[in-house]
Length: 298
Image (cartoon, rainbow, N blue to C red; front, side):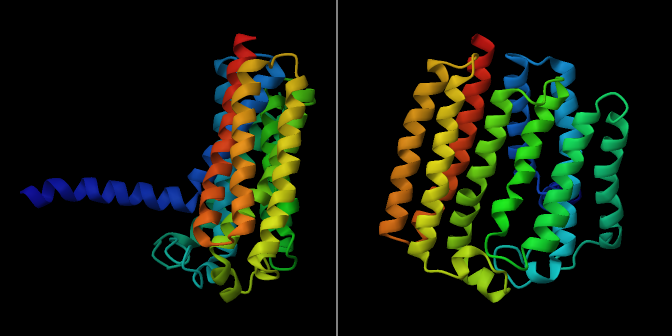
């Protein structure tokens, strides 16, 4: 009887984990966080429950569908990498794998079609983010050029602008700068990960920048984008809704991020790349969170 009571719970957790990996919900959560940041900046404060819900629902569906299409396209290469070989499509354990392209495509098309009649800019940026990530980055650039993620970062920028579009002000200067920041941040974030898994990418013949240069040289390329991201973060201070609540935490986080990047250059080892990778996540979270808080209070 004890086994019978535990089994459903284990199966439920396993199913949730499978879906989480397939639809890249960790990456999606970061994109949605950035989208909400764009909404707060464009609204000059709290964007309202309706607009926030619209951003989370439509953006979550479109980004999840894009993540699943990315894995479906790359399943053969994923099976060659230690980091990705346990993904449900890579290890061929998903019983409904043949339906993934259709389901994922509908997750993108349906929200775009639904919101288009009443908010065309939002529909445009939802579709743009999916096109950049799936077709431009995954299918075209990633197998061909070592700077693939530089352009791929524009998918995150589209997510930010979908947030500002949801509140009817997609071209708000603060949202545009945040979109630029995410674009500049993405290569430093992802190249740190690629330094960690350099052997994986070499084994699967994916021309990520760290596979075509030394780890120290890759660290310098990361630093270039770290500095550019920091400049964009400081540019946000000019937004009328932001002040010291944004400035102080972001200033301290910038110092820490640059310090970790310098350490990676001096000691281009896996643990330092991991440290920088995790810190870059925290850095973006601090920027968005303090911007939202400051916009509300201001």
